Structures are given as structure tokens and as C-alpha cells.
Image (spheres, rainbow, N blue to C red):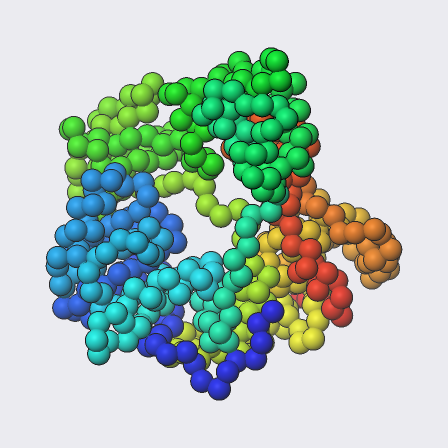
Length: 486
């Protein structure tokens, strides 16, 4: 848990501003620090594309970098940026580390990253030259993003950073490794297979139920005490010489975008199927393109450049939301804590309005608040997505069953009464343990190698990653108060 802040802020020139929109952020970036090299971080590819296109209209030299641009396109942008001076490169986390883009003068963060660790990587790109210092300008485009940025900087000022914790219970990777090792060795002894990993958990004898499932379902064949790749493994993962076994993550299907023979990048297919008036136009590499031909079978788009009107869209994103620590820091900000950084007048006014107008309905010192507004009943836990998902599963008699937990609150039944609430808490405290959250079957299908796991183990794997028992226990132990709003 974060502790009280030290006497002074960490070294660095950090400023937090509220600009209210992405277009306003583009105006600020174009106006400030002319003649310098500026690295602008966004936390979505769509933001990168939209922000990258805007400064170009103001005669600013702009380059882009994100995972859906082709390797050649990214390399050209990063090389050109490294060699230039008065320019901007707009990027996702692809430029947090690793790529050398030369000496940077400024880092600009649009809204806020999801972790202090990510912020440390980004600010660490500056201050490397003699006589320079670390710096970062936050430009919040929404009020909730302003509060998240202020909370992140509050944690940073306290010297807090997320602990490094491996994802729990990686059963799907156990299945992958058993199949990959059998494929590599051509055959594997059905009693000595743990030696491949020197008995390292979870690739030890505890993986026996997964191995049993693989053999029973035909992913592995057995003969004479040896394991061989079976027909189900070939069916699910055998395409292109089992290339599916070489990566442990999945990516949504994307169409390759081509201008002539040059690959520009990849785009989500939803931009081709959603209803929109007029010609089909994309925004990619900071430029607008009009679709001239779609090769549905080979997932390829052919385009030609046009002036404006392009749309950028990708599916996916973080499912697990913000952490307990960061969401609690947002609560601290709402209760009046300010990070030890420079706040612009706009940021100060926005934060104060949030505190004056919203705080009485969202937060109380020393506990949590259950607030009713009409039929909408919310438990403002400020505990993060995982803890709220755990609380919803643990208190099914009072939690609204038709909801997706949020970072800051859990929606409760509209007919909730104090007596029902106390009975639910008593039942939870008398029960044996907190409850794992339910998992959507679509998420199970999205877990790579889930086909090679028993259904119950695939569900348990995802449930463990959506759970925060410590955060849920901390919230349950706090005083709680009912509040009736207007």
C-alpha cells in the first residue's frame, strides 16, 4: 500500500494540464517547445492516428509508431525522427524502451498510462544528455483521465511502483509447453517429461491433469511409454508448421492495408463492416486512405491516398482495468490530495470542480459510500476492477447481476435495503472464502491454447487473473455508509 509522501518530490520537471479534447492537445503540442524533439505517448492506436494527423495540418513534422503499422513504416518513422530536430513522434508503448530515437528534449503524455512503472519508462527517455533533466507534460483530454493522471503522479511522488508479479496459474502455457516439447523432441517419455523443465513449477508433476486431458482428447498420442503429437494438436495448431505454438498471446484478426505494393499496416475489419455514409476511408500512418478493393479471402485492403475523412479503429484493449493502488490514489485526489508536480490553472480548476460537485456523492473519509440516485445504487469502493469483480462474485444477493464491474464502483440491486446489505455481509463473513469472479465464455475462447485445457481449468485460469482477494478483503473491512442522493 502507498505510504505518506516524502518531504520533497522526485527529481524531474513534471506538469499536469487539462485540455479537454484530443484536438486541443494537438494545438498545445503544435504551439509548445518549437525547435525541440518531442515524443508523445498515447495509450491507444486510435489516439496515435488521430493525434498524429492533427499537428500535420499545423505544419508540424510528425512521425508515428504503433504495433499495427508495418515494420518498414515504423522503421522509416523512427529513423527519420532520430535524425531530425524540430519534430514530433506520436507512439504507443512501442517506444517506451529499446528503440534508440536519439536525444529527446520533451516527453508528452496524453491522458495517463495504467501503471507507475510505465510512466517511469516513458519519463526515462528524457534527461539523458548532460545538463538536461527528466521531464513530462501530461495533457488530459477528459476529467476522469485528469484524475487518473493526478493519482499516478501522487503514487510516483510517494516513491511507489507496482511490484513485479507473474500472471497466476498459467495452465494454458503448461499445455502449450507440453505440446511444443513433444513437437521439438518428436517423442517424449510419459514418465520423464518434467525433466524438460528441471521440475520447475507449474511444469512439474502438478501438471498431470493437463497431460491426461491432452492424451484423452487426442492432442497427444501415446505408444510404448512415449508421447507423440496427436491429430487434435495438428487440427488446432498445425497450420504453417505449428507456428501457433510459438507465441503465447492472441491478436484479433486484422486486414493488411496496401497502397500499390507497399504495406502500410493493419486495420481492424470492423471498419469495413460498420455502416457509414459515403466512401470507405481509413486513417493509418497519420494519413487518410480510400479503400479501392477488399480481398476478403486473403484479408487484404487496397487503398489510395485522399485528403481527410479517414477513420482509425482497433478492437481489443485491457480487460482487467486499474489496480487497487491506483484507484485508491484517485480516491485520495478526490479527497483533496494533490501530487507534488506543477498543475496548470486549468487542471487546478477542473480538479476543484470535481471535488466540490462530485465528492459528496462518491467518497467519504475513513470508509466507503453506498449512494442511491433514483433506481441506481452504487457502492463506491475505489478498489480497482479486480477487487470489484471479486466483491460482486462474493456478494451475489446484493450485486446487480447485469453489470460489468468498474474500477471505482460496484452497481448493487435497485431494491437494496440496509437489512439486505447487512445480511449479505454477514453471509460473506461467515462463508469459507471470497469467490472467484465469473468468466464470460467468449473470454475463455480468447485464451490461447484453451482448447488444449479442460473447460474448468481454462475458466479457473482466467478467473484467477480477474481476482484481487487482498483488495476485496480491505474494502469489506472498512466502514460503509448509505447515502440517498437526489
